[in-house]
Image 1 (cartoon, rainbow, N blue to C red):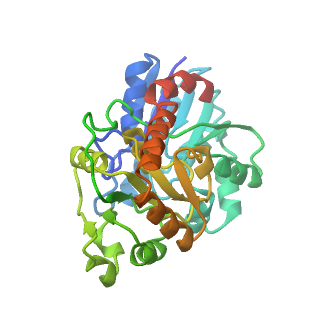
Image 2 (image 1 turned 90 degrees about the vertical axis):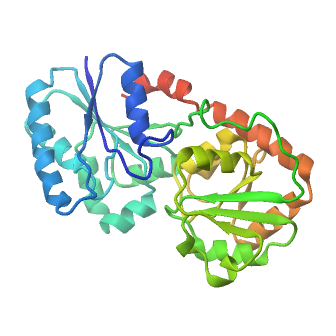
Length: 334
């Protein structure tokens, strides 16, 4: 029985230890029956049209080589404008191929609505699958609400705990160093308000792009904004910080959160989506508004012992989401 994994290598995570492309390569190395099909890059002029042609070619390849009992695992199902995996699934079903189709969805329900604009479109695309895999319980609820009544599995987004790990030597610091990573479904208006209103000895490291900071935030002495950082440099920066701050509109399974937890950072996060699938009160402060965030950061800036306890808990929690545990669970996802 062969498992064909169709994946896309996004430039933002290409070559690093947190993306879907990396996961696909690791699964290939771990399971001899896994065969990889990598979609062509779309960051070129006219790529949208070439990708449509590519989807036809991939379908033809699968139609020829799939055998009864084989499985196709779509790693970017419903990722809008990327790879057109729902077309491939539809064609395989309509031509009567006796293979199992599994779709991994890792965008939140609200994000999918933003992208597609119509729940009926989403429901139709889901109907071609035999099984859906999601990275969070809130997305599982959303998928069921679209009328999908076949198999559905919930798992955690993986963390490469061998690469993302705390620094070997802990540095003592007077200030609370807070890192902000990522841009997907972030509430940047709230982030600017939090920066402006937080009291205490807090330093913010912003790795979500300088454009998200308003002028008053950029001018503050306790705010450092970074451009693109290679993964090694980002890891070193994370290892110097104490807290990962995630001001979210929605979330399912965030590689920023799992990687930050693996480094051993306390989490100060929005209480939205599937966040409680990943964070609990031993390693996180869950917030519902600007006041919650500012109070949490100010409180942690004055409680170093609590911060260290939360950091240790975050690392332990991340180890449960390690690549090794993902390998163990992968056969159950198929």
